[in-house]
Length: 396
Image (cartoon, rainbow, N blue to C red):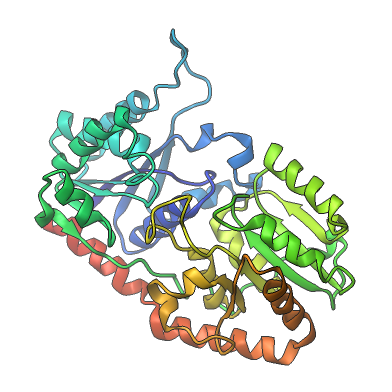
C-alpha cells in the first residue's frame, strides 16, 4: 500500500511522535510505502529532539519518506504559521504524485484538521487517531469543538480509547467506525542487548546509580516530587539524568534543586530521538516515571506513560506512580517483582524506594530481568502492526 501519514514526527518530542515513527518504520519494513507529512522541522527548540547530522537518515527508514513544512515561510497578517493549510497543500501534492491508498492522522491539531481538509479535497479514505489531551483539554475549547466533531464525522475509521466512545455518543457521532487497536512496544528495538549510552562524558562513575527521567517537566509527571524525594537521600551515590525540555521550566527546576541542595546530582540532556532511547535506558540503573493520577491536569483514564513499558522491554526496573499501576497493562504487573510503585506525593515513600534501588543491586537486576519477561508475555508488536494493516486494507 501507499500510505500518507499526517502526524507529529521526530524531531518533535513525545509519545505520539515516537509511536508514529515506530509504526511507519514497521510498515515500511513490511514493504508498504509510507509518506509522512508533518511540521516537525518547525518545532520549538525546547521541544526539539537532538538528532546528530550523521543520524538524519534514520528519520526515513526503509520505504519511509518525510515531508515537513519549512521554518522559512511567507508570513501573514495577523501573524500565523497556518500549519493546517501548508500541511494540507503538501499532502495533496503527495497524493497526486504517489497514488496514495489511504490517509492516517494522529493528534487532532493541526494534523487531524489537515487530514480532514485533505480527505474533503481528494476523497481518499482516512483513519483518524486521537490522543488523550486533544479529546479532552482541546475538545473542551469552544473554538475547536465544531471542527473536531467534523473530523470524527468525516473519518472512515477512528482509532480510539476507553473514553472515545463516550465522547462520540455525547456528540451524536457514529460509534460503528470506532476501533480499538492496543499499541505495543517493539521488543526487537527495545531489548536488553541495546548498546549502552556512554554516560562517562557527563562525569558519571561506573558504580554510580543512574535514575533516568524522560519527558516534559510538569505537575502531571510529578517532576518536582521526584527532585524533592531525591533531596532526602542526597548523601547517597546517585545521579538523576533528565532527558527533558530546555528553557524556563528547566531553569526553574534547577533553581529548585539548588535550594534543595541536590543540584549537583542532576544532569540535563535534551530530548532524544526514538532510536536513542533504548541505549539510554540500557545504561541507566532505573527509569523513573512518577506520574500517578491524571487529575487535575487531564480527565481520569486518559493518560499513561509509554516510557515505562519501553523500559521494561529493555530489561530495566521502572518506578511508576500508584495511579498508573491501576490501569492498562500495568494492572498485570507485580510490585517489587517486575515493577516498583510509589506514592509520588509521599516524599518518604518515594525516597525509600530510591534508596532501595541504590542499595539493592541484585534485587534491582532481578526486577529488571522479570520486567523483560513481563514484556515478552504482554507485548505483541507484530499483532499491532498486523491489525493496522487490516484496517488500512479494509478501506481500499
